[in-house]
Length: 381
Image (cartoon, rainbow, N blue to C red; front, side, top):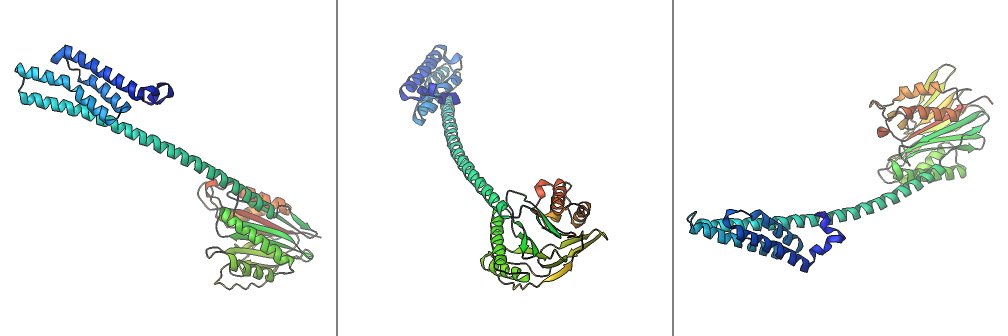
């Protein structure tokens, strides 16, 4: 049937050829039927002109063809009745039944053709919708890639190092963009390091990392230090973040001359200090509520700790412990501590990259989360 719609055979559906073909086929069968009489049953052959008329000429022609196809049967039935094979009533019933069969063939053909036309139209509409969807997806993919490139250009990408202290950062997003954030730089004679996690995932969260980067940079540029940096950033975030958004943040300032670290942990995952001399792993818990809630008055204050030469402060986001392995288990804090110990002898940047690589190697890609690893290592001057 599909071939009848090809350009080479479209003439079969033109009215004049269709009428001629229908008339010739119907008359030929009727002629043969008249010759054979009631001794041969040719009723199934009439399906051909009926279905062709339905396909090429429509409902009226199909039913007209069905009526005409039953005419030879009239004669056959009355001949049989005259010969005493059955009664007149039986002959009438047989004629009506045959007519209904032909009408049924015509109607089924018409409905199949209508269903085929609807299916063809639906397929065309689906194809158009699919093209529109592909175009939308392509545009969205370009937008996400652009957002990813913008985000990558804003986040710290090179190690920060001064005599006495070095900082390495590795950021690994589950997709092309994410809501995890890391930054590092210098404030006068000190180094600052910051890791944050914006609620949510993907491009929406990535847009807020751009905001956080701007707020942090601008606040430090204006001379803020310590807890004042966090409080000013929180004040700005509280005014612009949607109600469902919030930020956890670990902000630290390190004095490379003394190893003293002054920090604020605003609702973020605890930091870890690894002291290889004693093989001690020390937690640095939260010291302030999370940031960005209008109804939560966060006033951060500084806490401090001491790093000795060789000690490393490791800051990370929850993807480093909450992503799942291929077996379905969460990575967990204990595994992270073991990995930190294994790579503690490396420079800060190599250490951050090695920790992230080992975690990613055992993480199920279908159940991974954004991940940031920041290593701040205190060294001999």
